[in-house]
Length: 320
Ligand SMILES: Cc1cc2nc3c(=O)[nH]c(=O)nc-3n(C[C@H](O)[C@H](O)[C@H](O)COP(=O)(O)O)c2cc1C
Image 1 (cartoon, rainbow, N blue to C red):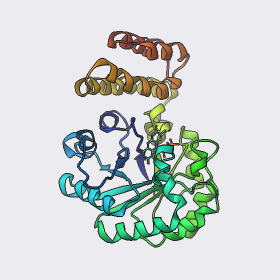
Image 2: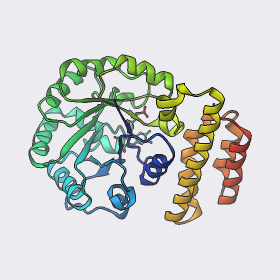
Image 3: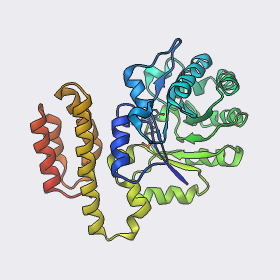
């Protein structure tokens, strides 16, 4: 069973992945947030940092592509391969954002199965790299899934990572576990599971449901509790008090590392604060009595105010 960090636009960027990898239980793969393929694609400097070994060191990073145009996909994948040494690319068929789906991309592409089939035919014939797919299970109806599975079963997909929600679900409700089971029954490609692994208990429940999954992918759960995989892999062997103090220490180290990186690479206090505040909206609820500290963090206009608020949260509260 492998563990993957989910691609999350604006969150799991190269700064985040490096800091995470240094401080916590390492993931087997880190997927970049989506990079849009365009005709005559040249990567922006931000995109280069996402995929370049210069900024990602030895981390096992897989670039993710968002497009519904096969030629653009192939060209972009070849840039990743020829200029940055990647062997695998991932196709985004899950993004539910209206601006993406309106153009028939991300989860929107699942609404045009015949076009998707032709697209996959072309990219599998012409890319010459390993292609994994991250998919939702349809747009509006559970019945969509059967046709999509028929299509997926035709191609040598390196791994099909399934977030078992429809596009219309966004992130609401419980994942549609039955549709993941249907994939297990009907297709032979390696399958990964993604969705709502927010705690050790949730992990155990899903692991029991899907013991044959090749991988589990962690998104919001790992952002909120970056020590979640440490807890899953080694936590049961430690006493609760030891775990709490060790994870809090690691959180502090992780925070300081990421904060330092952002200050070094981003221009201006505002950009650094924007990133850190977004992160705290996920992480703060993992602390006792967090509300007033989060308010202070969110209100801070300067790095000094921010640091004071973070220091008092770490100093005065415990992780749950
Ligand atoms: C803020 C945010 C950004 C995301 N960006 C991407 C992305 O760039 N590519 C992608 O495939 N999925 C993206 N996702 C979806 C996640 O990768 C993941 O599938 C989803 O959060 C469900 O997993 P979780 O329940 O473990 O969070 C994003 C989700 C969120 C909340």
